[in-house]
Image (cartoon, rainbow, N blue to C red; front, side):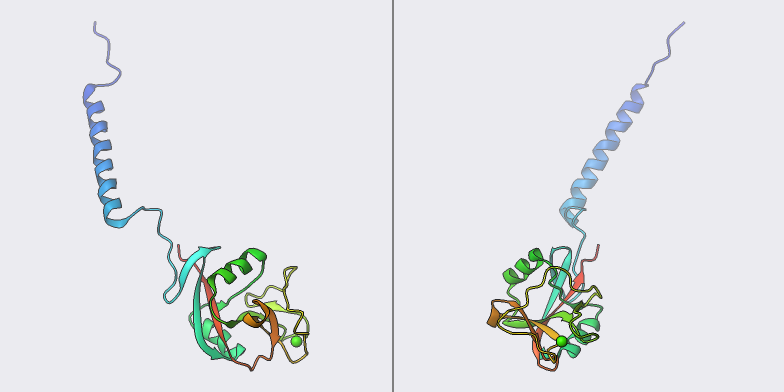
Length: 169
Ligand SMILES: [Ca+2]
């Protein structure tokens, strides 16, 4: 009486062969297409994607706030937000333009500032003290004149602006 073998030698060879095939396939794939994890990309016309999975589009043509917001909206973007210290430091490093609109205004209700994504202004607010808020200044500029602090401005004035959109995964 002979004992049954636990694993026939043929099966072992087959699995080794399979591993070899997969390794070769993966090597060819990565040489051709790069690492498979690197799939995120910015929407057309937008770049970066390094901060909080956001991509940006600088428009140097000065426009009024409403026209700037509409321009961003035309491809599904929104005027850039500046909601916390980390984002603000990032914007300083990017150095987009001399001065530009951010998506923050109190057009609907005086002194209730709302971001371009609908969120009401939180604790992080860096309005420049050298420009006291006036009632007709309903829109906000990141201004080089105040070391890139926020200056409430007449929305009909024209400034460059930055649109933002999320990375595509
Ligand atoms: Ca106002």
